[in-house]
Length: 399
Image (tube, rainbow, N blue to C red; front, side, top):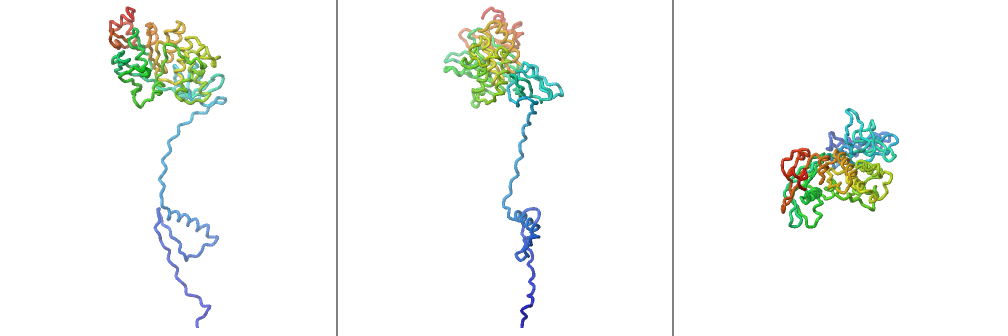
């Protein structure tokens, strides 16, 4: 008879089952018959079990994240008491030369009232603008050359220009001279797409800035005129706008969003470069139409500079001005040429000699379209011209 208290025979334990796992190593799954872990063992067994489960049952592998693009370095902190950094246009500095080995940004006081501040990084300057300490980020776009290739123009069936090619070098003043009706002003308007505003007008050829045709289909009209500004023969400020609003009108037309501190700095800087700041700084909210003719023309120059053009076209800007205002405009042009390429149409031979480095002589024979007779250094053209027609024109024989 069997003893009820006899110990049952010992059942051999099942060996652990090995399962393949992903990763550099494998793990054993604990069999169902294994003893249950006590409270003291849970802290050791369960974390290992959790790590193993993640390895065994993981079905997807995440792709590595692409490296982040390096962030643009932040500008240095403004000095104590200065306003936050603002972004502005070209400083208009005539002799902008940071000292060798120095991080200071030197900007002459004529450029919006900024003064050198040792310790600021290149491209930054600090100073007082309208009584407030300001630190500004200075953007100085590179100078641009303008090139016209085989330009022909018509008004209806009447051809006014025939295959005119001209290179206007960067950073110099190029004057266009010639008698009335030879196509100078038409050529100037073609350089920033004003010619196409006339319903009957048409043209052929290319106008290149930085080797890109401004008449290409993928080039926006606003972008072309923002790069190539224009000042007309007759001053045309917005009469109902204040002097302040006249300067920043171009920003609104191009959809440029700027803050108040930036607008204030830009107005002062552009008016200073146009030689008008000292005359109007106490009446910026007065109507622009209340200024004199010479002041209105300089206001139009300041308005053109506010959108930081790389080329500035001037169509007889001094023809309606007195000698004193003419002298101020000429001095302004000589200062601006360090920051912008200038092309000017003028009937004043002495003015062409005073301000321009390069000169092009346009002439139209009777019944024929206009073209360039001679082009080159201004002094050489006025002293030793190659073509006899050029000599006769600059010496007043005709024209």
